[in-house]
Amino acid sequence: MLSGLLAESDQLLAFRQHSELRDAVEDITNYLIWRAPGDSETTLAAACWQAQLLAAGWLVPPFGQLWSPGVSKPTEAPVLPASLIEEAQEVISRELGDEDPAWAAASAIALWVHAAGSMREDGGREARRIAAFLTEQVRDHDSRHAELPYREPPPGQDPAPGVHPLPGQLRRLIAAAITWCQNADPSSPLSIPPVQRPKSVAVFARDLSGRRDFTDWTYRGVLTDDDEAFVVVEEPDGSQRLLRDAEARARGMFAWGYGGTGPHTLAEVLVVDTLAGDARCPACMGAAPCGAGVARCRSCGDTGRRGGTEQAAETLVRTLISQIPQDCCWVLTRRAILAHLTKQATPTGKDDPTQ
Image (cartoon, rainbow, N blue to C red; front, side):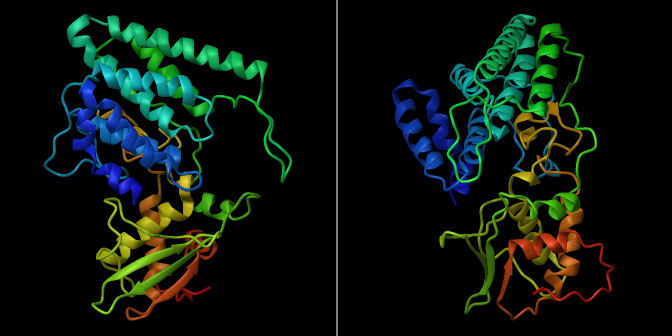
């Protein structure tokens, strides 16, 4: 719900450009982000950053979606307002070593695109400044990590103070941005480095439930008296949330018992929800939409999703969702859905959706 609210807040966020309103708007958005449960803060922060780019006039496709038919990609790289340049640099200074690199990656990509856009006005001066800034931040982080490396605590113990190492793919992305900005060549494409041998959705689904930190939860498909369908997610701590589609809608979009649009929408959302952070593209860390069609991630086609997500959704429709009776409410665990994602069932296979 919070993610959907942030996605619809681009008009509110546009007022961050006004100095007299900036503090009030920041109070609202920060409250939304840091009230998120569990480990959702960084994901929501990245979603808020994407909404800010929309407010600044960037053409940013919805997370997990391709550019819509009839909507042309930008022909020129956009530039960031001064306030967003400052914010992106603050995020990178603060978040480089975070376990979830999505926010830092989104900020680095936006700065990279901004550097390209600034070439029209200053011939590369801003690009070279950004290259120097990113280089300094990486060196500073590596120095702090060397002085106080993070140590994984034993089970049941709180972690001691320490600095996480810079995630390898984030390092490669920033290195690519630095190289481009140092050369400041407008004819050179802004290409996010791919990941060698990326794991498929099926492999992640197979391995995920065996992790030591795996958390199971329960999905309940519910039908209302007026035949609307929605899905309630019950967390291990007893809290509940509604499953929502890419536009944060929770009802009227889902269906089961056949192979049409509603079941496919449900399958796509379930794949992303069950894989959690592992559903993001490992090359761009889910941040490619912030490239505004200029910084390109060929690994995911700028969707921010791991390759094979659509095929995994097809598998889920075939082996599970289409098998549930249309007029039936149902209960499935996250572990059970992951098991279906690993299946290579034939279209005629008759799998029991409750297993």
